[in-house]
Image 1 (tube, helix red, strand yellow):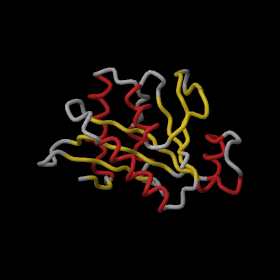
Image 2 (spheres, rainbow, N blue to C red):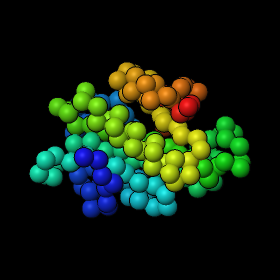
Image 3 (cartoon, rainbow, N blue to C red):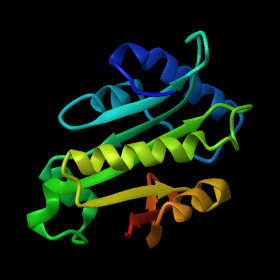
Length: 163
């Protein structure tokens, strides 16, 4: 069952991220402070726990940045009138052994619904070009590549939800 995570889930989020780093999964890690920022403003994280809630199986962080941050991220792709209506699908991680069961896609669908309910008109996601599974999932949800870019020197693809 998907639920909105509270800040007390942060140690579990960091543990899952470390497990994914240990497997050399193609994603850019986020600091504990970065995840803490996900709980401000209209930002949120969704997660799936194991049956006894001892382990976080998957999570997704979504943000609706302020107009200033959206302007920096959007780099002119978004009209000024919509800057406060831009949603971002950020970190999505699924624990090894639970992949291929649709958890990531279910988290993304719920994230999209919640971003729309919070006023997002446009929704973006960033993925590593070598992460074929993530790109396949994003495209199946209606995301299209709009730009190739570098974030902190790492090649990334910027995708936008087109429905």
